[in-house]
Image 1 (cartoon, helix red, strand yellow):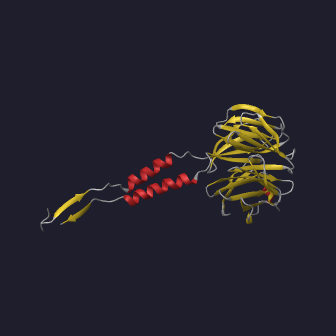
Image 2: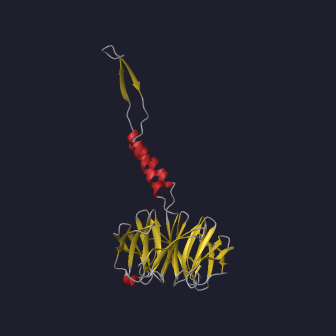
Length: 313
């Protein structure tokens, strides 16, 4: 009871300080694995690993490859297309050899590679087709999609498979069941090689014109010349993490970093590579996880309250 005769109850509510909130946010972020950039060097026959800052982790994680092109990672397994031997090799993501020639049947200068579940799709550059295998190496169908024109990059979004036709400058769309959705979803490209998908956005590397174009996954042009001036560098493959876009420049031997809005972060983030091609970022980017961590911390900050005096008559 206070001096004026009124009963006063002290209600203690949980007190979360700024320090506690930050500690919780940091512990949530610590649960997120640091991302690693895997880079294929076609000329060197290697796959190297780098931090997204450009710092080398192991520049020769895997060596002795035969003119490797693209790569794909599923769990702890890494698969790489080898143009020179017309084969797919399997390794661990840590660099161990599982089977240097896991798949060879039905391949003809394989370039692009993509994985969906236990299905592994390969673009046969010289065979003008896409073949389907299991990740264990069994042939599902060597003629999954035919009638293509020098296919290179592959990407999967949901149940849709996108393929770049280098020979005619198009991106075609198919289902992972093999049905054609639109063989010329995007056209008028200039030596398109690789591309990357983030949400509803599709970014394309134009090798000949030295540009990066942005489109929607439904084929609408957003900016056909989002990034320019890469002509002599020969951009071939792309990878995306959050709002950052990484570009493998074949002739320049570099990896450039840009924003998905087209701004230059570092045109030579990594240099001294021997004809870099395929790029993969692992673990696969999950921006929602980071967003949730930040939201959790903000919620705690908003909940931080000191004990209050509530007066009742």
